[in-house]
Length: 403
Image (cartoon, rainbow, N blue to C red):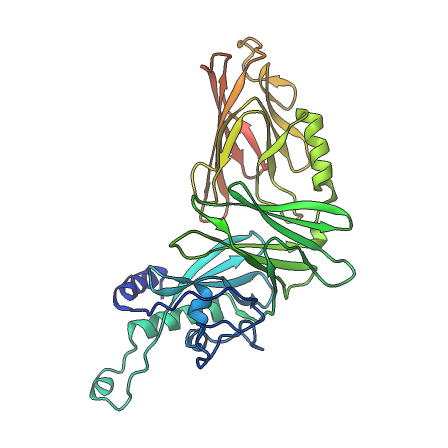
């Protein structure tokens, strides 16, 4: 069935479904049972299945709704580990939201929904005999299950380890990894350590009012290699949890981009106080497509799908590629390309020059990104003396300037 029909079904579902709101559950370890607090009620035990359970069975379990109102539930993986399914309860739609993540791009590939409940009709009733067609809830559930089973092959269960967020997570084995996740200003920063080296893997921007959840988990992936999936969530008052997910292939950790080496490189090209303002998504070797590093001033960033991705005014900046080569530099002389070409020699050198940056980003249906970086060169009085537009070349993996 086409996706537009799925969307129509969801809209119909939101109007006809009703959901009982459970009392707010106490926070507990995901290895323990999770329920409403009623001792007589059956309690939900997460990650206790030997196979990926059908959605129809899962959503009937006592405590499952309360659990997914607080934590994302990692349903399972595809056979090759390319995709993973995560479930949260969507209170506005009164349905379960199922995000299908691509573990290579770290992005949501597709989102589908499952009804909060499916009532069993009395097969002996006259209405059931006269109308053998499935209800809207049953139809939506069947379509979502088909997407999981046939579209993404979510058939591999998982038993993740969960911890308090401010605690590190260590993976088993000789090549042990140490994951850390902390909230830094308006971002959740995920890092990993291996053999004494440390890398920043992801920086999840937090929306206004959001905070990092108090628990997170790590799970091994069924695909070949040393792959681990981290799942956390962001919370805001009166809103559903928003999953934050990242899959790491530790065999591809690049020694050139450890935090120590990156800090040393930035100090060399930009001076003391340099910091990374934005980094492009990682390639197959876990190397960011590019780094935008700045010194002085201030800036803000937003999450994928939000605009702009970065905005602010800084004293100096550089754009480096995945190998650490400087492609653009904004300094007292003006905007310089490849450390040799001054883009506008007519502008006099100004030691008080500053740069206003605006990064826009949009992902196309084919997965490629359209990026545009607007650079306003400001004089000592804060007036714009020149505006440059740098566009992203997806083939060469770098910004270009067309005068």
